[in-house]
Image (tube, rainbow, N blue to C red; front, side, top):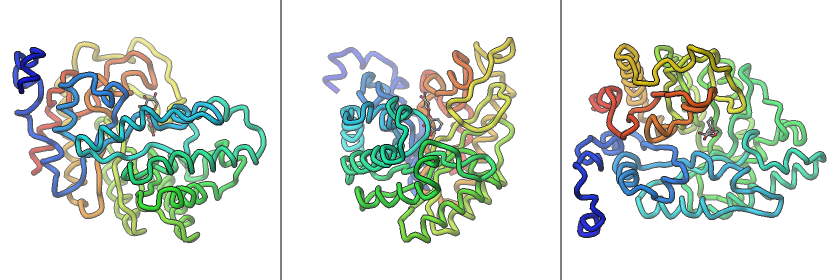
Amino acid sequence: MAALFLTGLSLLPDTAFGQEIPSLKDTFRNDFGIGTALNMAQIEEKDPQMTAFIVRQFNMATPENIMKSGLIHPKWDTYAFEPADKLVEFGKKHNIRINGHTLIWHSQLPPFVRGIQSRDSVRAFFTNHIKTVAGRYAGKVFSWDVVNEALNEDGTMRKTVFLQHLGEDYVTEAFRLTQQAAPNTELYYNDYNNEQPAKRAGCIALVKKIQAAGVRIDGVGIQGHWHVGRVPLKDIEESILQYAALGLKVMITELDIEVLPRNFQGAEVSRQMAANAESNPYPDGLPDAVQQQLAADYQALFRLFLKHKDKITRVTFWGVNDGLSWLNNWPVRGRTNYPLLFDRKNQPKPAFYKVVSLK
Ligand code: XIL
C-alpha cells in the first residue's frame, strides 16, 4: 500500500482496480478456468491497474501474438525468446497458467519460410521449430496449441506450406515432436468454426488419426469467434459432446462475439473486408438493443458451458476489454467494436452481470 500511496495511485477511486467487481475466475472456480489473451504491454506490466485487473479476473492466459512462429523465430537460426520468457515469469508471479499459442500455423509465419522451396528445408524448419520452442518451455507452459487452423470449412485439410511439403501426416508429426520435446505439457488442436458440422467431422477425423498413430492429444480448442444474435448453440453443444467422446478435454480458446457488420463467418486472419459507410455503425456507443442481445448471447453460452463443465476445462476470452480486441482492426481497420465482457475502461458490461448471475 505504501508504494501505491507514494506513486499517487491511492488517489484513484477503488473502481480503478476493479476490486468491487465480482471475479470471473472465482465465480467459475469449481467449473473451468477463465483465460484471456495477453498483449506485450500487459505481459510487461506497463500499467499496474491493468495487471491488478487481469490477476483478479483470470487464472489462465494465452499470448495474443508473441509465441507465433514469425515473432518467436524470426530468422532460420534466430529465436526471440525474451517476450515469451517474460510471459512465463508473469504467469509464475501471478499464478496464471499459460497456454502456448501456437507451434504450427499457416499465418504469421517467419518471412524466410516463404522463400523455402524444398521439402527437406520445410521439414527442417518444422522439426527445429517444434523441438526448440516446445523444448524451451517444457515445464513452463501448461499446454500448447500444437497445430492451429489446419482445416478448411468443408473439413478437408487446408492447403498450407506444411501440407504441400510434408503431406497429411504433418499434424500427427507435430504432436509427436511436441510430445517428445515437452512430455508433461498438455497438447491441443485449435481451430475456428470447428463446431460447424462439416469442419467438426474433419476435426474428429484428424484427432482419430493422431490417436490411431499412438500419439497423444489432450484436447480440442474451439476458438469461439461468434456473431451477436447468431451464436450456434446447438452445434457448439453437439461438438462438446462429440469431442469429449473421443476422450478429449474441450476448451473455448478465443471467445469474442462480433457486433459489427460482417459478410462472412470465421477468423481467417488474412481475410479483409472493404470499408463502407455502414461498416462502423457504433463509434459512440453500442445501442441498448444490441447490448441486451450480446448479454443474452453470453448468458446462453455460459449456461451451456456450465451444463458441460465436466467436459470443458477452460474458457478464454480473446482480449481483456473491448478497446484491446483485435476485432477493432479486423477484418476492417479502425472500427469501434464491443465483443467482450468489459468495456474500454475495464468496467463490466451487462453481459458480464448476466454471466456471473448464472452462479
Ligand atoms: C490475431 C491477433 O489477435 C491479432 O493481434 C493479430 O494481428 C492476428 O491474429 N485465430 C487465432 C489467433 O488463432 O492467433 C488470431 O489472433 C485470431 C484468429
